[in-house]
Length: 171
Image 1 (cartoon, rainbow, N blue to C red):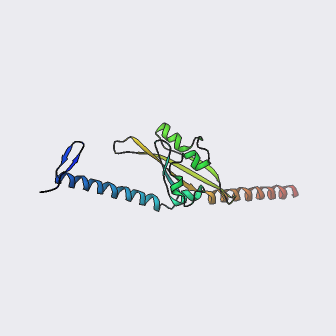
Image 2: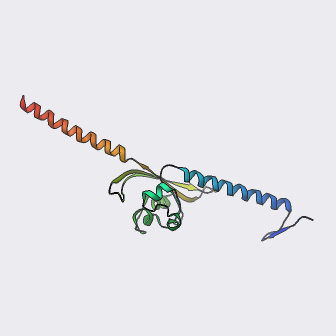
């Protein structure tokens, strides 16, 4: 005789138990895949829950905000604490949680190296299977090189303008 499993709604038949086990296996596989994708992203990425608590951050995100290789101690931190060491500070994550809408913003991040990072932050709500907001994902794109190149172009433009004015004064 096949073993039966009892739950809150009664006894599961072997077929029902097999179906439930298969569904759990599929969910675990999908979660592992999702975590694998987020982990493999080469850009900083973090996921926050509905209470504004960190549930996941990949290695580039942990490193960018000086939490390198410290995922266990970072999980559960409020976004303000994770990003700014200020748990009460409003962030793009809190704005997304309040509005239910994604957004983007340009930020300057002070790094331990002393060199500022110029970045674009993209925040997007993640719905659950019922379409209700369940998490917020944040991706950060480092625009420092582009910013530095734009600044160099501005400086060179100013130098060229000064030279042109000097030449015109000589004529």
